[in-house]
Length: 281
Image (cartoon, rainbow, N blue to C red; front, side, top):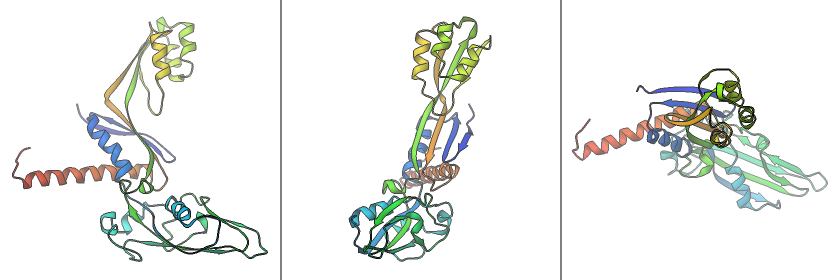
């Protein structure tokens, strides 16, 4: 069976990729690499020079680390994590400087400091969600920070992971015979419009369900009210990879980078095996 890759949907930060003819092991490796090995740009160093707010330094540093920055361009401009993890700022080939200095007069009103208030040395590395809260600076308080962001990978810290969801699932295939459908069956599967449409068509056949469709209710119907007209199987040769990105990278870029990482890992493994004098195809 030939292997094919089809992009079923790209919507916002979510992508659904259909992998046909690939082993579950290969597809699951891709799923895991999406979370652990695709680099993004995130704050790694935070020097807090003055903080008289009610929030501890550690909490502010943590919030800075969770600010999501656009990283598509950064992947091309800055050195990889393997190089930068051993260096300290302000090395320009690795780090982006982030500056914040907010003071509120005793007679003034308080200010909510957000990600949009950060001054960033590289205009192409900007917050994906400008409204991300960092701290509240009350009258008479000051917050002065110099931070540095670099490329990193999720296996080093979850803050660098480009995705919040990475799921691999078999494709559910529903075989139907509408000539045996009853009113009770149609009522039972009412939460599945595609199945209702198929059972109302007057014929028989099969439909494949894509995306985050919970088929537990459908399985229940197939075993009870629709026992005579529905059958569900899960095709292990047709795998759906569903990735929901954080916004740091375009979802299609996440998949591309994960596949490149997997290819590099395979090449490295083959090289190590060859160095041991083991030959083979």
